[in-house]
Amino acid sequence: MKQLGNLKINKLGKIFVFIYGLISYIIFLATFLYTIGFLGNFIVPKSIDSNPEVSLTKALITNLILLTVFALQHSVMARQEFKIWWTKIIPQPIERSTYVLCSSLALILLFWQWQPLGGIIWNIQNYSGRIISFSLFGFGWFLVLISTFFINHFDLFGLRQVYLYLINREYTYLEFTTPALYKIVRHPIYVGWLLAFWITPTMTVAHFVFAIFTTIYILIAIRLEEKDLVAIYGENYEAYRRRVPMLIPFWRNYEL
Image 1: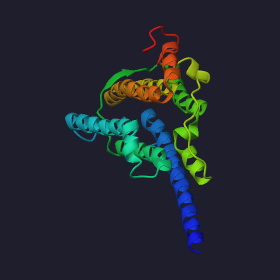
Image 2: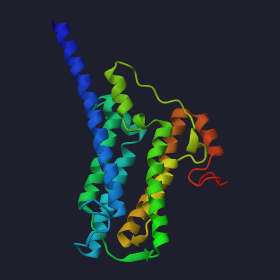
Image 3: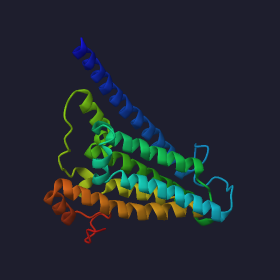
Image 4: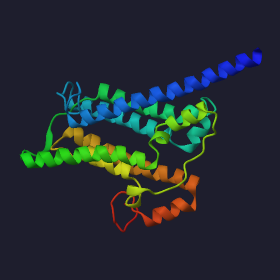
């Protein structure tokens, strides 16, 4: 009877882990959709260019703090050293889901506390120009999403980990492959982010600050991420780095 009871508890634990991963993914998906509206200034109640409410200095400091919180969370929790320490506290199968959840919460905090700055750097008034701009903005988001499926969308966002735990299968790292867009650039997801962050018919000061900060973060994050990938995949990834540009297709300087 005691053994049967332990089996039931263990099964409930696996179900709880799976539900936790599923909820984390749903929160990510909602946050992803909100981010599109936030940067595109449509549908959402508060966007990057809503009416300014505080002084320029206070708004700038607040926004830089919010962006720094997101950058630190996103980078620190992704490092292998942190994962080794972190999984001594939380179960291994929910490590990725917890990372995804914390990233979503950091973004939600940013949306909630973001302070618009006012001021316009450029404003495309031509109708065709605005249509092209919004099309490239949408393409950026499409590129982000589709690129995750070319590798393994469900592993990237923690669902594969909790599912394998549910069915009593051990997690293994994905085989190193370079499908589709990954043959053209090493980081198509980041290319999509950069398009989404920079392409806008009306570039405000707030949007410009956001784009500059996130671009610097992306360039730093790529270095840290590739260091981890080399540690995992060794010479296979080193050869890939020598063969394929980082962000700009067909660029001979592969560091870009």
